[in-house]
Amino acid sequence: MTSLPEDQSRINSRQSLIYHLQHYTTSFAEEAAFAPLFIELLTHAHCYRRDHLPGHITGSAWIVDEQKKCCLLTHHAKLDRWLQPGGHADGDEHVARVALREAVEETGLQNIMFGDNGIFDIDVHSIPERNGFPQHLHYDVRFAMRARMTDKLIVTVESHALEWIPLDMLERITNQNDSILRMAKKHLAAELLRHDQHQGKRQHHHPKLVLTDCINVYIA
Image (cartoon, rainbow, N blue to C red; front, top):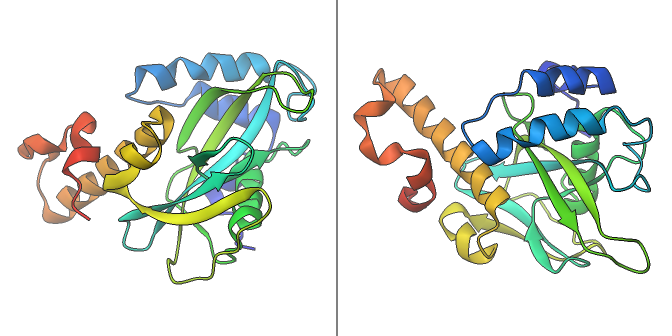
């Protein structure tokens, strides 16, 4: 399995996650509101266990291909939705390791590389009641990763399918899943900023590069 780079290796305990959340910045108001909810949850001793209610920590992976035109989604068997790979921490406080482990287990990919940053995105969302286990919340910590589209994918029993989805198709494929679209906007904005820096230009010279427009202006 891919080793963890320095930025992600630092997020290896409850206290380090709290620290990174206290210093986490985002331009998305709904995401900014999640950080204090995470920090409060992390005061509970068993919040990394899947049986902790009303919610628990999970980790997931925003995986793009090397050309950065597609992201890898799984059609979740239980939830019947297209989602990024991820899952329960099961007691492991090293949440970046959790995200990588789940990405490998759910996709079969063995050569997954982390992106440049630490935490890429955070989200709190509801999981419906199933088989007697009550409705609850997932406090999901997301990490940016990349992989080769040509590598073999292995569909597990947890998934109906795995697909590399062009970024300009995400809104339709995911039924306007706000958190996935938010990650796509972040990814596209970062790529456009890197392009501008490479060209020695300022981002505001490009009026189409507004975050809310990124999902629409992307050309596959």
